[in-house]
Length: 149
Image (cartoon, rainbow, N blue to C red; front, side, top):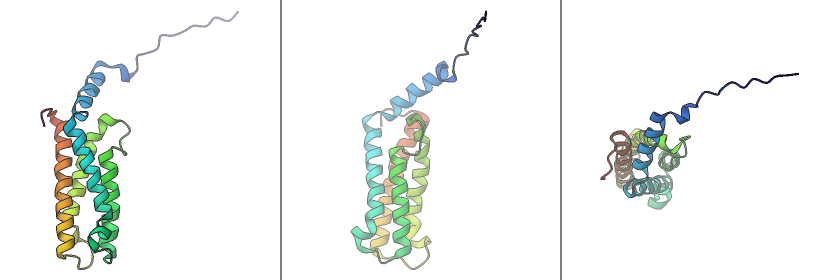
């Protein structure tokens, strides 16, 4: 005769009250209309940044074209939350999106070559500033719980 002894299972960390509270707070911060609008505008900034060399007409500058394509795709993915394993953790990714926005602003002067034309500067500064603003909105909502933005 075999006897089976069942040991009580310990509750998982997922059921801890603090984890549940943090998830609810984060969900409230990221499901508001402003947060959704900021994410959508951030994704559009990323898509525009990736396509801007062809839209604005500086695709002949291969270094800046490659830079904008890569950073634009990365920005769009970050703003969609594609790199986060759980949606409530993706607000921290907005700080990386802020960094991409800053890089976008300085890229015409920083990448190798002479790409500081009126078109490249105007395009990159505007899209970089908007990306930084959207990333800050999302980061501040996640960090300090601003719900009225």
